Amino acid sequence: MRKDVMGLIYTGERDQQLRELTQERAVAAVPLCGRYRMIDFPLSAMTGSGIRNIGVITQRNYQSLMDHLGSGKEWDLHSKRSGLHILPPFMTSDNIGMYSGFLDALRSNTDFLKRSKEKYIVVTDTHMLFSARFDEMVDAHVKSGADITLLYTADATLRAQGPGRFIQVEEDLTVSAIEVDPTLPRLPHQYLESFCIEREKLIDLVDSSVSRGQYHLTRDLLMSGINNKTLKVNAYEYQGKVWHLDSVQAYFNCSMDLLDPQKRASLFPQDRPVWTKVRDEMPSRYTPDAKVENSLIADGCIIEGTVENCILFRGVHIAKGAVVRDCIIMQDGKVHEGAELQNCILDKQTTIREHTRLIGPRTYPIVIAKNQTV
Image (cartoon, rainbow, N blue to C red; front, side):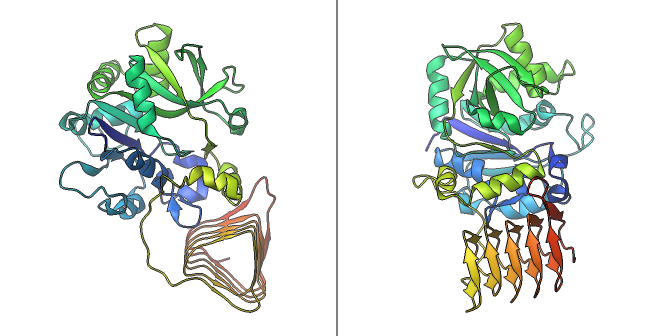
């Protein structure tokens, strides 16, 4: 247990990038890999690193996220002291209930930061998917004497998936340059929007920036500090697999990647479990006519048809004669007899009628919104 480190998770402003998947939920609440939500991974990484005081800053569409997190007992964060703190936006004379940016969100929750006693704080977003050891990053930060340490990856394949934050890391691990959402990235490494800093230092920097009308963490605070040399910014490399879920296609590709046992193992290390909300279900049932190949099947499913290269969440029913290939079907989805689906994402409680045929291109999968009947 790290008594000197607290955690803060920002549930994001980019919920429009995932279209139908975030119409009624935050990015942090997007279901993934059969039974998990996006927030389970940074939250489990923090608890696995010994962090026991964690705040979750919400922005919009956070009802399902709050329902999922509950008291935090699944992550052993329901203690009387510290534990899990959900921090929804609220209206004040200075705040209309929506944050202008990450720095504005941090300033609005200054009271929570001041009440906390830990010396250091780890801050992360939720649209990057990876399994980090934050305790190792904190140790590197303390040893370096830097003002702030950024987590980054040198994986060049991640850069091709869309906009992001890119940094130049020197041999002594200092960050000498940063760019935000370039059309063509010129810097070699991608910042994973996770960082470590002293808690009091963060409070001071946030207050100073917002008082000058600056609300963007990377563009206003980090870029200014690096360019003007007012901040010593270091970097810590994450060497595992990273997925950047900045589009429906990226979400689909990530899900298909997780059908590969080796890639899935990088996200679910044996020594650091990923915890999630428990839903008691009967084991999945397969009839004699069922055919299942290379798929992740959660509890409570009934499989009577053909399922290939799919991820099925809890309570999904694939009727006799139905064929489902390369699909993601979320909780309580129903595919009726004779239907054929390929390259589709079905949100929760979606129904596909008899003999319906939906075949989408792999580069632009078909998305059916929550509670729809097709």
